[in-house]
Amino acid sequence: MKQRLFRMTPKWLRPLLQKIYYFPFDLIDMFTKPDGMIPPRSRIFIGSGDFVQIGQGFKQHFIALGDLQPDHRVLDVGCGIGRMAIPLTSYLSGKGEYWGFDIVKEGIDWCQKRISPKYGNFHFIHSDVFNKEYNTKGKIMAKDFRFPFEDKSFDFVFLTSVFTHMLPADVENYMSEIARVTKPGGKCLITFFILNEESSELIHFGKSDINFQYDLGGCRSSDREIPETAIAYDEKIVRNLFKKNGLVLHGDIYYGSWCGRQNFLTYQDLIVAEKNNS
Image 1: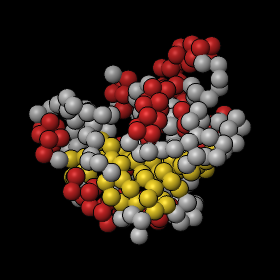
Image 2: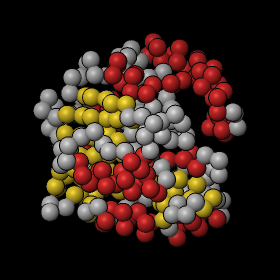
Image 3: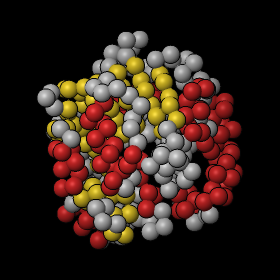
Image 4: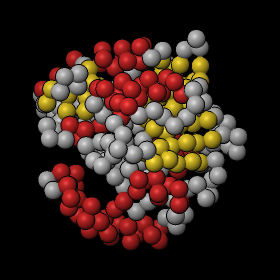
């Protein structure tokens, strides 16, 4: 209901509406979550769902599926306002290191102010990359963006709900960059909306939360005017992207519930892959 209300509101008015909608919740959280790292709900721009619960859930996926270790060097691509970083503060040791970057400056400012002072091995960078949904004034095109890190510098790289807002040329570049900065034998964990026979059939019969009705060539979107609102990719395209960049699937795809599936791991589809040793 809340998401529908926001989508029906002009984009320039949404921040104000969000503050008004969440004011009573923020007031309660002020007294019940005193550690200062959890952002007010009115400032969370990364989608619906319980902020803390989702972060904790993915922390377990990172460990169980991605073999994340306390001493690993970790990269969070599209770190938002710290949803994944916060639970990792209690897992990464002093020998481990976290780096996160995002195109929304407000989220980075929050993390730099609230997380980094308490955890010196957690670092956050703003990357001024253009996105029609999240950063319309961005100066760098995603298809041209180079991650600000050296080759083979991370043990574990993850992207949660990033490629679900990116167009094909941008995803291709980011996949290449992920492969470049991941150490041989290192792993990445990435979420998608994946179109295959099952999900397409569920969409056709109205079971899906999202109807990807607009064909953009290489992907499908739920919004003609702002395609980056939600983007889905054909499974063959996704698998080929991993193969092309020397990333071997670690297990099979963990399909999500977004399309109305009864058996699922998370909301979005999830893939874990390992960087070739060559």
